[in-house]
Length: 205
Image 1: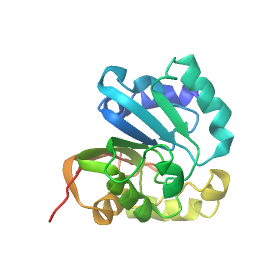
Image 2: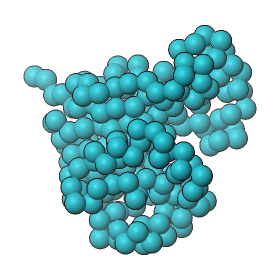
Image 3: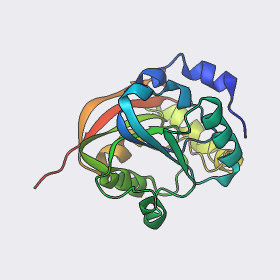
Image 4: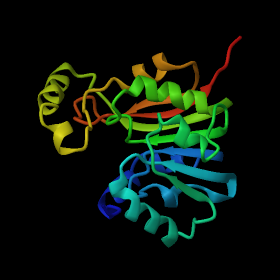
């Protein structure tokens, strides 16, 4: 599975490059796939990036991409599910250990998104940031119905990806966040409207 130059070109027209550039400190990249985002990170403000990727089919493409961009000293691929605490701990990824998490087009396909968001919150330091760019359920009811129909085959064809997840609600109800910025992108009738922004971990009590 290789990096898609056409998809990278599309992403360049969105808010995604600026969001990736906001990553800082110790970063956990959720589901890097073949490494579409690696060139967008600002290495001078990052200590380390851990790319947590559960799909072993991306191993060769991701490691090749890391080498091609000369990020071997900075980027550590971690081939496991983000819910696998033991595997994460072997890389020092424990509670309150990361400054920033990036999630770009991933929450649509994880099996239990609420649990994943809670796990990301657990891994972040107090005040740490979750940076997101995800597609979500449409606010237009006609489009939403079409999304539901497409979902009969879409997840099978695209590795579990779902078109109809209420991503903003999932994010805000699964953990305690301060909204730094959170917005919708695209026309409301779009089949893949985006939710993007930055959430900051709040720890009360």
